[in-house]
Image (cartoon, rainbow, N blue to C red; front, side):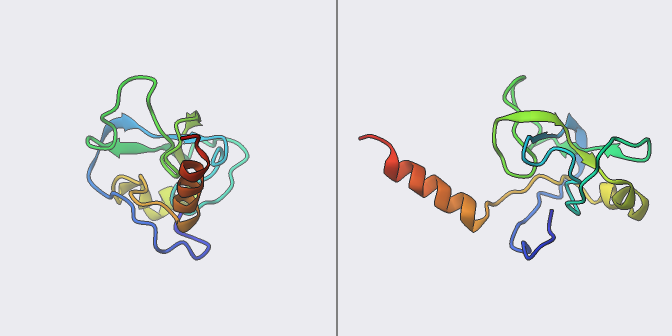
Length: 115
């Protein structure tokens, strides 16, 4: 997630709880930490767990761990490499701030909305 010159993104990193993280179609099959594309779910991959604050949403209102959209498609996973390095124990991986492109898209949508 923090690859490809996106160092300005900040993750929550609180102690994880029982809530499970989800991803949207755009991030489906990608590791939430290193952004590695995985074609299939391997036994060495682990499900993403969120902290109690980030996982406190009503059923059916889950959002993508990586971008925050409400169109979720499947569970989020850590890749085998991040599990081997112990990065799944670093805390909650939910991205807390938005990228410049996401902020501009929100501004454009607000400007284009009928008044």
